[in-house]
Image (cartoon, rainbow, N blue to C red; front, side):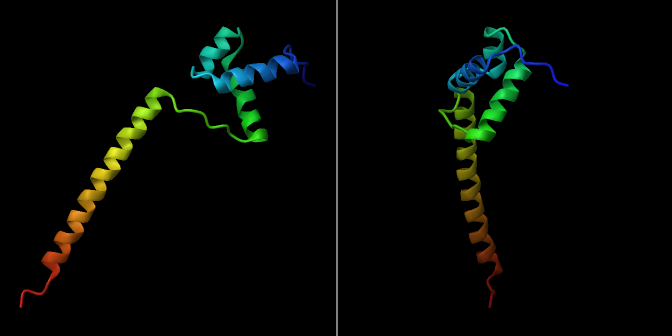
Length: 95
């Protein structure tokens, strides 16, 4: 038998909304609310399963990583294009 939650449904919903809208990590929000971070993380995951994931603005570190990855993709696409042209050039019949 499970024991009843010490948190009201209202507190739970407010905590989830705060975690989703905050740019802070879930662990930081949980500390501010004086609760276990894994409990809040579980609530957020459950909320996302039930209501769909709400994509907000990316955190600064993720935005920087995304820009770096996009730059790397462009660089690799240029290299790939060059190598295709070089392969076609060298594959020509020298006659």
